[in-house]
Amino acid sequence: QVQLVESGGGLVQAGGSLRLSCAASGRTGSSYAMGWFRQAPGKEREFVACVSSSGGNTYYADSVKGRFTISRDNAKNTMYLQMNSLKPGDTAVYYCAADSACFRLRTDPKYAYWGQGTQVTVSS
Image (cartoon, rainbow, N blue to C red):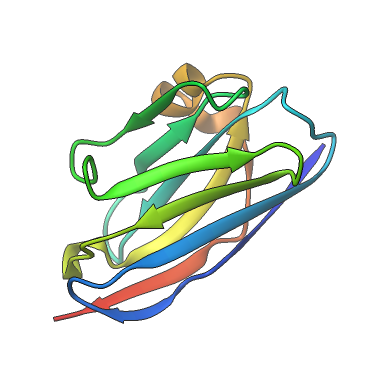
């Protein structure tokens, strides 16, 4: 079992920045790939970014590429999402997830561990 807790959400103006954190506990270590998803009101949950267990490989949705940066610190069991140049379209609840590989998170995350989510609101 892995427990995930997100933090760092909030209200920011368009063009601003936020940094989300996801703290992992339980059966942790560097064995899990970790990623971020988001869900806006009335929309389906969508993949945002993923980082491999070692931190050596990262993957991004086209909509955030060049603006968001995912990273992890395995010594602290924490993953981060640095979000720059935020747009109103980035408004959503952001969820942290963990699974055996980024491929699984990106294509079929139904067996992933999930956090409770943190709200990000970008005003125009």
